[in-house]
Amino acid sequence: MSLDIARSIAFSGLMTTQVQISVASANIANADTKGYTEKTANQSSVVTGGVGTGVVVTGITSSVNKLLLKSLIGATSDLGSADTTNSYLNQLQALYGSTSSSSNSSTGTSLANSLASLESAISALQGTPSSSSLQANVVSSLDAVASQLRETSSGIQTLRANADHDISSAVTDVNQQLQQIATLNAQIKQAAASGQPTGDLEDQRNTALQDIGSQMNVSYFTNSSGDLQVYTTSGQALVDTSAHLLSYTPAAKVTSGTTFNGIMVNGVDVTSQMTSGNIGALVNLRDNTLPAAQSQLDELASQLASTLNSVHNQGTAIPPPSTLTGTTSVSATTTLSPMTGTVRLAVTNSQGVLESYTDLDLSTVAGSPPTVSDLVDAINGTTSTSGVSASIDGNGHLVLNTSTSGGGVAINEMTSSIGSGAQGFSDYFGLNDLVTGTSAATFAVSSSILNNTGLLAVSTLDSSSTLNVGDTVLSAGSATVSDALYSALTGSTSFAAAGGLGGSSQSFTDYAAAIVANAASKASQASSAYTAKNTAQSTFANALSSQSGVNLDEETANLSMLQNKYSAASQLIQIINEMFSSLLTAVQSAGT
Image (cartoon, rainbow, N blue to C red):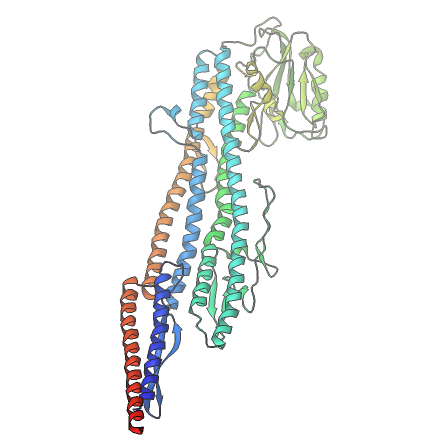
């Protein structure tokens, strides 16, 4: 072998080792870089005429297990979903307040505790119904329940609005990654065509794919041209020859009745295809989990309003108000069918002494079927005996009033029954409602009672078969209404199935506790799911890192070995140069 060939071999070894040292250094420097995989400078010998004439770097590659990568992306998608669900359900649980482990129920802040405080206030009123301070305490406790229902409902809708805006942000992030993959596809093909390494570009592309996976579940494959193609689970293209971006417009305002826009790609609504990842969880929370929580709260509010008003309309305040205005929206032509039984309308003075009354047989009201206008005419036809006149105000509410100076209107529903719900006369028209609203968002104490707690019904109009003017027909010491309110709150009420809670018969406090417990159970399950998904994702991530990540110990040892090779190649070149120099000197000496 000639010295020239030997020097060429040494130089090729030196250059190859330089490339390998560069690659090893890059591996060490990027050991903590997200998505970076270990690179290897592959070498092969150069053979000329059957004789080895050096060594050359044939390429810089990395080895990524495709099955492990696919498993990691799936686990990352599951983790993204579990993380988001866990976060939101913890926030939902916090909305309901805390329960107390103490036997003193007033130490908690949950809806159940607030309802228990209302029960206690009504229980105290039972002992002294005429106490203005105890009446005020009942109204205050009920207002606290109403405020908590409205605030919790508002909190649920705020969470839905947050989820909706988070979807918009996630879509923006997905679009950035889709564009990144499309750009990297082009760069990888260009680099491969010019013989340049593509490992780092492929790492960036895999990282972008994992980021998309954390946001939504996708399918993907690499085609024969080296392009990574990404699709929704039903095959809608997200990246093929170019990026197909998602589009989404969040709702301007979110209420329980809001209809949301779809997540679109190429004119197709793909919202239902997002069943995992951050977006999948957000859609499920916004459209299913949180509305279910709202429906539970609305069921509680609806039944509470119906029950409290039904009882309160059976009574009257002392002194009774001179005007009663209903809350039910009606018109003159609203039909009242079926309508049966008798209602007692009376006027008393401020001490509850009877001034006038009549018993109106509702079955005799003209009309087939009778209308609200017919009923108004019937009531006005008794004004001379009852002292009560009726009208429909501009808001479509029935109004009863008396022109008797210092007198007030009192009602006993007696056997009256109106409508398919067989409501009593006062209850049907909402003439003496304690609360307004039929949902958690609208539940409130009647403004007139909130402003004047003396309007709280604490007595019932005497139901004796006959009454005489001058009789005391309203008793300030009667506990009839407060007893009925307490029994209604603490007794069994039928609740319809709502938001995953089955139909049941229980007290309001127990139903509220069931709502809180349901939220706590879901939050606990979400926490456990997050822990499990986090473990699974970490397992796949560690496995992939072990297979294709940088091992610093190995790279450090490899770098030391390469330095020795580089030093040996340098020494070899030096020796060959010395041999060339000696040979040249010998030739020159021979010539002289």
